[in-house]
Image (cartoon, helix red, strand yellow):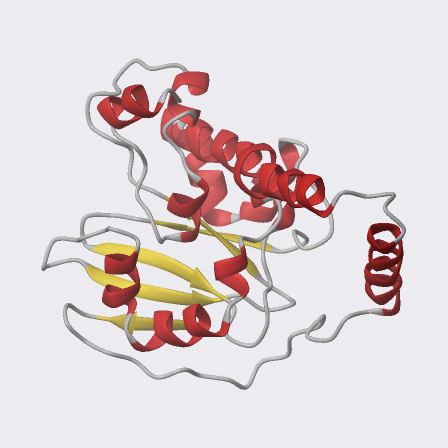
Length: 221
């Protein structure tokens, strides 16, 4: 389900689609109970666990998606395949798993910027983006991105041209989305590995843009 927003427009949240996993499964409940016991007995350092989770949220996980995007930027045939059948194209790179069974790639252009949300829970494409960030699962983000996507982008420090329309895609238990950000200028002839360094997790959710070569150099990516 998608919500379109022209410049300056606000939208409404739309429900009416099934979200499996809105409630914790029996396995997830057991994992949380075990985690609590281990922390209580001192076998696990909660700060170390937080750092481990953060690593998978921001570094290890999104590398897969960055590979997909960089390949699409460099190879027109793969880009076309990703547009037609993102599930097959992504699976061909070996990124297969739970929460990634049915993928759709949405491509940013000067005319349209795409953003992803799960309005009812936290459906997220784990095989390509890793663990979802805390803010993605938060009620304020889920509500505001549909109502005021320009405001959300401003919160993330992103300003789009006035002519750019914003389209918000609502992930479900059946379909998950990957944003293909626009390729930065000045990257002609770059290798896939070089391009992948410009692709951030937020740019593949739509709350950010791909880094420019200068930004990547400044941040040491």
